[in-house]
Length: 297
Image 1 (tube, rainbow, N blue to C red):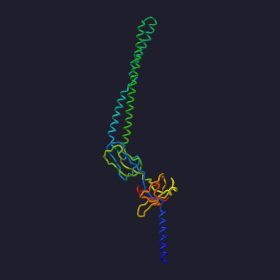
Image 2 (image 1 turned 90 degrees about the vertical axis):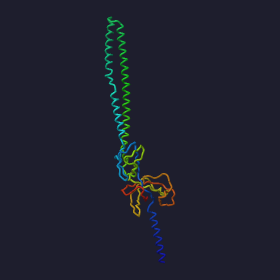
Image 3 (image 1 turned 135 degrees about the vertical axis):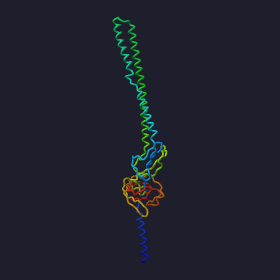
Image 4 (image 1 turned 60 degrees about the vertical axis):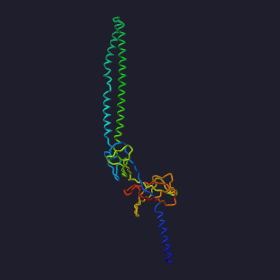
């Protein structure tokens, strides 16, 4: 009788332990972070590249420079060309001053001969000659002004085109200076000092590990109890039974089901289709990308 009592006690203990184990978590997954790969935006030799895997980078701080000499020289050349164009711009007032003076003198002569012819003191031909001279000078002045305006506009277009090229080169010069778009930890480094890089070549990968996410998987039965903004309890698994609890917030729920990943456990091991959810967790420095985690809904 005593042996039966002990046997029933053991069975009851196992059942309770299994139930507690089953209720330990509702879903599991791995931690991940927002990762960004930084690419070269200019071609050239890396003159400086202060990036080390595992190092913390601050958004906007320069970490490397691609050779800027060719672009800087081109900007100087364009600056010199702009000065030449500017020096060639005509001073319209000065260049037409002589013609205007001649025209004013011819108009005075025309008025004088008009009075003389009216008084009969000069022949009609002298007045006709004076009128013709005025007409010639007026057409000459118009043509001169038109030519000068055309030249001025052409030089203005060349100056504007030069300014546009300088702006484009200044943007290229800015892209020679490498920085991280986000504050985070360097996960991978793809190049070294002195290497020649081309536009589009990956330089390094950085991740914001201050706010980390647990990608967990829930069954369709659990899905009805999960919503965006829900506060949940997240447990990190450090192995050998060492865990740590964190507060988490559900930030994303997949709209499509998928087959249960092989490395993931759910509270219903028979579930073939699950839904991915992302849970945001404030990292205290101990959580690492790829670490196993559990969530209690």
